Each structure stands twice: as structure tokens, then as C-alpha cells.
Length: 534
Image (cartoon, rainbow, N blue to C red; front, side, top):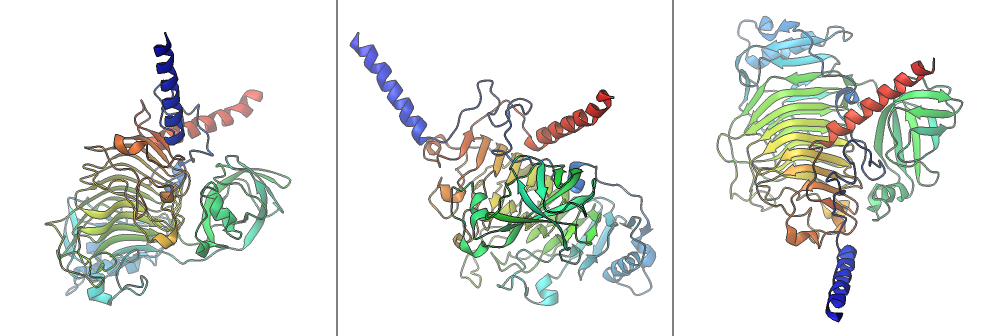
């Protein structure tokens, strides 16, 4: 009888050892995630951020579909090139009142573009007949036209510059109030003076680090953030105010971080009056084929950028032979709905670039957001080998990438206080480097706490998140969530112990939709409550 007793004891010992060395990796007994449950009943926003405010108007309104105002061919004069015609149409559009939409229509056909098209006013839309019908052929790169980039430090058009640029002025409005306190995962804050704030208006909450303490907090105090980001403002929370009582203010959305004296300083300001409600849609950008110039040596075959703008959109576009598809910088509440990327033939090559590196991809970024907030990228179809199919650059926060597919996709977090980001309901195809991320090691971990991969499909089991640190290391980001992701079984037991991992769940397959639905249900219940009281 001793033998069964020893077996049970050994089993208990092995179970204890496993619990000590493995990250959290068991779904709730129901088969649903223990971060969410079936309908959000298990949700704790301090562990799983609220991503439901991503996109145009923070998910509160659908993308607009204003009627066409003018056809760009109306502006063609004798001897005009296609580029001159398009620029003449845009010049006229910029003189129209921005109280109403101005929609410039580019009819079916191929047009040659040899300069940048700028959208620098609100409510201006550049609309093709559809990405299978309207093509902008681009025979010269940004380097060919303007020389090396002056913004990258390497001369390459890495994160800035594109042939259609939605761009506004950059600035910050005066402080209206200082936030004295607020708890993570709640909606109520205390301010020093609420007299200049109004219910129903959007405001920016600007979080400034204090001596590195807030930056550490964004890693759940499980990692010491790089010192170069001390005392900087790298978090912006855009939210409506729901109610004001004395100096107590109720926000529409949950606080992603606690506000505490000596840790962070948070000011409330109005949004800067820049470009908003403008868009690009229904166009294919076909670049002249050439070998990809290599990492940080991009010649500027970039399609669209959104810079210093908010509540804008890019819808139903395609690219051929691009260095990068869509770049977002200092933008917020932007929706990208539909981008297809292809090459006419591979751009990979073994021609050493200025850094003596070979070029093993067709381009750099599919879609990226840097120092941008609440962006929503969906329905992407990337059929070429980009270094990073979609991803988060420096200080990009609260972004969502979803409902996309790639031939061999990469979902990137690029350090420098990047994240939290949600990747959900994505098919990465082969997934050779699906969870591998880049960025210089001096910029710290790849991902802030709360970054989440949820419902990631792959042809084969994928490697754990890694960069240039040891695979599975907490140095990638000490507190991340991996749910419904098929990671190689041999690697799971060696992953960072503070990572949350669940191999498979019953659902939901798209966490953004689930969070948005829960938010709408709660808002409806709150709106109905006063009526019931009467």
C-alpha cells in the first residue's frame, strides 16, 4: 500500500514544481479565458486593458460616407500632368469651408503621381473608385524627389513620409486643470479646479513621468524603465467628461494607470485644433519595382501617412512594391479599414546596404503607429514579406490590430514604452517570426504591461515573444497576455513566469468586439437607470 501513497506524493510534488516554473496557462474551467469569461464577467481592467475606445470617434460613431463634391478631372487643363491635376483639385479643396465635407473623386484609371499630395484641412476626403479601379502609379521615390530623409538620422524614410499625407500642425493647448488623484480601472478623478471643464466634451489627459516612477509603473513595477524617458510626457488619454460634482470629475473611459503625487503628473487640456475627419479611400498605390533598399535605408516608397491629426481614416487601399504601407505619427482615434499589400516580384536581395546588411524582406512596415493613441487597424491582407507586417512604435498606446491575415506575418512591439496594444483575430499564416519584435535594446523592453495577443491563428505552432534577449525572457515585457495562441509546447514551461498564457479558449475570438459590446451594454444600462427611477 505504500507504493500508491508514494505515487500520489510524487505527483503532488511535480504539480507544485510545475506551478512554480510555468506562467499562468490554464483557461477557466468553463473553457473561456480567466481574463474575460464568457461575457466579460471575469474582466479585471487592471490586468487586461480596455481597448474598446480604439478607432474613429473612439468607436462611438461609424466611419462617415459623405457624397462626392468634385471630380478631379474637372481641374485638368491643357498640358497638365496627372500630378498637376490632382494638386489643382486639392488646392481648390483647401479653400473650401471646412464646416462641411469636401470629397474629391478620382475616377477609374491609372494616374501618374510624381509629388506628395497633402491633406492639410479637416473634412477633406480623397476618394478613388475602389482599389481595383483607381491606381496612382509612382515612378520616383521620395529620395528621388527630395533627397534623403532629414527626419530619420539615417537618410531612410523609415517612420515618416508618404505620397499621400494627412498632416496638421503640432502643438499643445494650455492646461485647464491638474489631476490630483485617480485609481487605475476607475472613472473618477479629483482635480484642483474643475471650473473650466465641461460635461460632454473631449479632453486630453497628459501623463508626465516623475523621475522614472511612472514609466516603471507602466511595467507594473516589474521592470526598471530606460532612464532616457524620465520626466517625459509619453501617454495621452482622450476621453469625454460624463459628470462634474465639485472638483470630482467622472470620465467616460477607465483610467489605464493610477494617478498619484510623486509618480506621475497629469494635466487636462483641450485637443489641439489640428486636422480631423479627413480620409483616403479606394486607391491602389503602385510603386515602380526596385530592390528594397534595406532596414533604415528606405527610399520612400510609402503610401499614406497620418501625422498630427485625429478622427481620420484610411479605407480600402492597396499597395504594390511598397517600403511601407501606412505610417501614423502623433495621431489619435484613426481607423484603417482594409489594406492589401503585394509585390510584382520579390524585392529581397543580397546587395549590402550602407550598414553592410543583406535585405531579407520586401519592405519595412505594413502598418505602424508611433506616439499615436487609440488607433484601430482591421481587414489587412499582407501578401508580401514585410519586416513588420503590423506594429507599435515608440510610445504607441491603446491600439488595436484585428481581423487581418498575412502570408507569414509579424506582429511587432518596437520598444521605447510601446503598448499596451491588442492583436486579435489575426491569421499570421506560416508565422515563422509571428511574435518576434525589433527595436534597439537601449530602448528597454518591447512591450508595456497589458499588451495582449488574443486569437492568433497560425499554420504551425509559433515561437514565444522574443527580441534580441533570450527567448521567453521577461525582458521582452514582464507582464503580457497570450490567449488563444498556439505556442510551441516545448517553450511554454520556460516562458517568463509573469506572462499570462492560455493555449485555447471557446471564445470570444475577437476581444475588441467583446469589449465594445460590453461597453455598449453598460452604457445602455446606465442611460436607462435614471428613466427607471422616474
